[in-house]
Structure formats: structure tokens, C-alpha cells
Length: 257
Image (cartoon, rainbow, N blue to C red; front, side, top):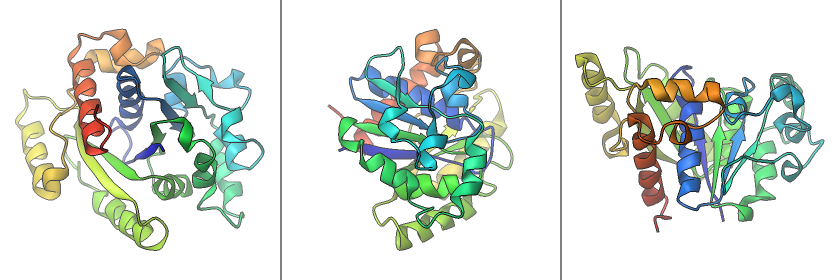
């Protein structure tokens, strides 16, 4: 049965999609069967694997609207053990239509139930907001992974997100737990990054991952080449950091071989 991880933060630009793509890549490199669900209407995870959104035959929009089963829109990436359920900007319109559906909060959970035995990990890349899509992701997940940028205002909005998590855990998903907090865009040359990381550790304590994701040009370049940083430059600091993250996730979810 798959471990379902929802990667979320209502702030944009914190490395959420980058983390989804690269964590999925390195979990697959460790021979786990991985599905990345692109649940952000921007579709950056989809294009991050080199898929052209305008040429897709099906997407998560069709799944959300109940028009197609998720297994029918899943695509194989060029990497062994790694698949993606792609999306397009039309998912934003689908979210509006979703509000009128009776089962509007569990559309994603229902979709995942039909495929969760086919994978070891399912990673949901959520939009940067506390939207209906994000709530669907949190209800469908076993774990939340929270990327936090080590810059000013890093913790802004985090308390609200955690309150939402507690409400969802109490009312609709008692199995939901915080897998960990990931410090991203860390620059060891600046005192600000160190100060912010210390604040994050004070707030979240042992929930903070040991690894930090550095501010790294290779990580920034890889998406424009339609590939994860581990494939783009496996010797880069960013690739090494995401490889370490994968190992920590495997340990925390009880799947470390």
C-alpha cells in the first residue's frame, strides 16, 4: 500500500514543486514505485519532466470532474519506477466546478484508492494556497511535507496551515501526520539563513529534516531542461541534498531498505 505524501505550503516560491519532482526521482532511484500527482494548476511538475501540457491526452482535470479514472491519465516518465499524473491550467476551472459536487473534499482520495496498491509512494504537489485542491490533497494523504524557505517571513502563514491540518485530521483524516519540515534555498554564507533555520527548529523541533536544500544554480536550471536535478547534474550540491532527503523520507515512513 502506497505512502501518500502531500507537499504543501500556502506561500509560493518555497521549492514545493522542485521538492516533489526531485524527491520522487530519488525515491525511484532507490527502486521504489513512485507516482507524482501534479495537483497545482500551474502544472510545473508536469513540465518539469519534459511533458508539453498542450499536447496531453488527459489530465487531473478529467479525474477531478469524474470524467476519467486516474489510471487512464498516468504517464510513464523516462525514469524507471517513476510515473506522473499530469495537469494543465484547466484544473483551476475544474476547482470551481468541484465546489458544487457532493463529494468535493474526497475526489482525490477516491481516485488514489483505485491505484494505491500499484505504488510505494504517491507524492501530491499541491497549489500554493489553502484551496479546495489543497484540502483534497490533505484528506488523501498519510503525511504532509512542508517546505519552508530560509528567508524573511518564512513562517508566515504556517500556523494557519497547521490549524487546517489539525481540523482535517480531527474531522476527515485521522491518519494525517506531519512527516517533516524541509528548509529550502538555504545559503550558508548568510546569517539570515542560519537565523531562520534556528527559528524553524525552535518551532518544529524534531520534525525538521536533518538535510537542508541549498540555494543551487543546478536545481534552478534543471526544470528548463525538463528533468530532475539528479539527472541534470548528479554531482551538484542540490542533487546530493535531495538524495539525502529521499533517504530520510524512507526512514520516517518505515520503508528504508
